Length: 398
Ligand code: AMP
Image 1 (cartoon, rainbow, N blue to C red):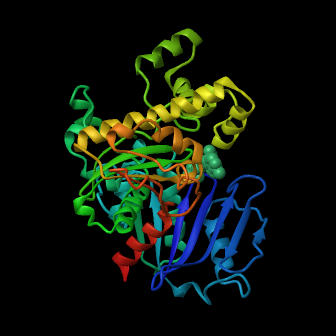
Image 2: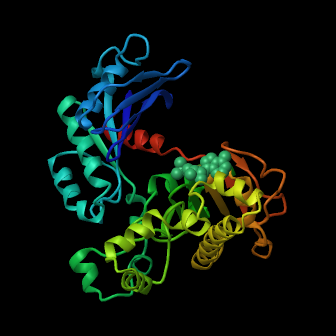
Image 3: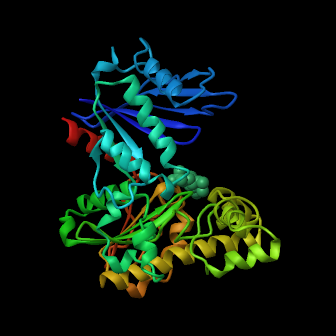
């Protein structure tokens, strides 16, 4: 069975088609600038060098998906003769609140439930819902599945997800820790167990998803028991442009000093903080590394702040799980940034965490990078959220 995976942002759309009998990627692509000037579709068929690039006005997600469908049946770049060959569509959906702890087949009731979650993820859920609506209209007979970023974290115990604020805010408004990147944390934890040849039920794993957005999760016996992101993806680690955890009193302090409102301060914490804010240079770790090479002190400080925040959560989760068997690095920084992995793991030897500096010289492929005498296995595992979405979609609809 062939599965189409769709990940809709506000003005972009990423997709993949996978053959689930062999779990092989047949094609992937990206539509950018939906609803803006200069809409473009970039489509790549596996094992075909040329990319198919289409620059046509695309006013909304429905037009974008119609163009994706045309590329998928194209005689040269396509991977199916007709869209009837697509057995199911899997949609990435960011926020399911407390409504779903696992992926679900989409029907009208699911759409209504996800619409109720829009206030929890006002930037992310609306484009996800637009993508679902467009696909349902264009492929009315094809089953659709929603796979949620929050679902994997629904196993957290209350002491991990309840904030120490008046309890009514939880019951009235749903204010609690939800956590994000769940699909990625789940995938790399399962891969870690596979790579170590140990049943996941017998493992305590800390997964570090370090990309532009970044989060750490504590996974005990295959279940998430804590994660660093919170009510929103602003919490936890210092990130590319996000502050991560700060003293909440800073918000009104900056608002008063600068004569701006809370939303404007939150915008600064989301878009102008993290690596960008501390370094004053860039949110991209490659630029930070270059600036450090040129002797820039604030870039060096930004990297130390980031590494400190990752180490901080690793330490916290070792305490929460009463130990750890494996630490996994994944996502853009975790998979590629040798120096940052080194700085994070440096001086954790007394906790039994010993990085092998030679084995660590690897990028973007599965590897064990701990020393042979390290009690804790350190693993590099490229994430594959699309594969998890395709698998769940296949399992629910086959
Ligand atoms: P993601 O959000 O997972 O796509 O990660 C994107 C981020 O990964 C970029 O903003 C960079 O900071 C980082 N990144 C990607 N490639 C490298 C690399 N080769 N070295 C260091 N950082 C990298």
